[in-house]
Length: 381
Image (tube, rainbow, N blue to C red):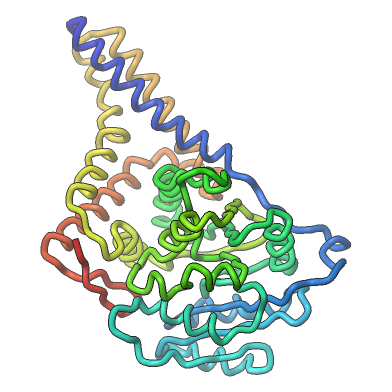
């Protein structure tokens, strides 16, 4: 039997764990959903001009489908500007094949202090002519009415900037295992749905697909204002929030699809990049590791410990935690399109994230740069 004090501590800890799981569920429930406009509505009314800006570097596996989807948009006069950052894999040839519908720009030499994607987006924004700018990642494929739907939503909400979370295409085992946990992490870390509250402190734009009114973009300084920031979408959202501009964020499974990572190694590098960007904090990373272990691994030990010591209360509490943790992760896996069985393997996904944060911590302590797409960016405290 466990002493009463020890049991009380376990009860309090279990409540904290359950509340943490509940927060993720609550934020997922609160996320608004944006569906495509019906064809009749989508084809009606005058339209503002839109310039699509795509920054790319060695994206031959994804960019062709993205450009073809843009060519199929039901949006007259849509301008597509692709800024290529020195691709060597056939990306440039794919862009050239679509010369009639795509405006190609070779990225100038990267200036000191700039992150490659930010510089390419800045170059593309200056070249585009639209009243609205749609920043799109090279691996995001849009449904035919997507641009019209997002523009109508932004105007209806009188927003300075709006962004959507696309459907995640998960092909490999590691994608199906890790990305459902990634979605939970983004929801809770950035309190994603609260972006839609005008007076909230939370601010999030999804850099994969976001639309901004040009005047508002220029008012905050555009990508030049966050030139050295790897997590530029978060930094820009914070600048919009500080300026009092209205932001909107929605899940849009019927509007956009993306395959974020092609394999385990690319996913690991991408998540390490996102762990702290170029701003390193050992305390924050160590806290993240402790949080992952304390909220997702340690609670699973209570059931076998309760059985081993013969405590009915601890065993019952441990069983509740098992049901809550595995049940929640199965639900998230199914919600984002991964087989339910991968939710049962969530401790492995947590281990992947622990490895990501540990690697990021070691890199930061050794002052090793952040690397992405063949480029390296110095880390600063």
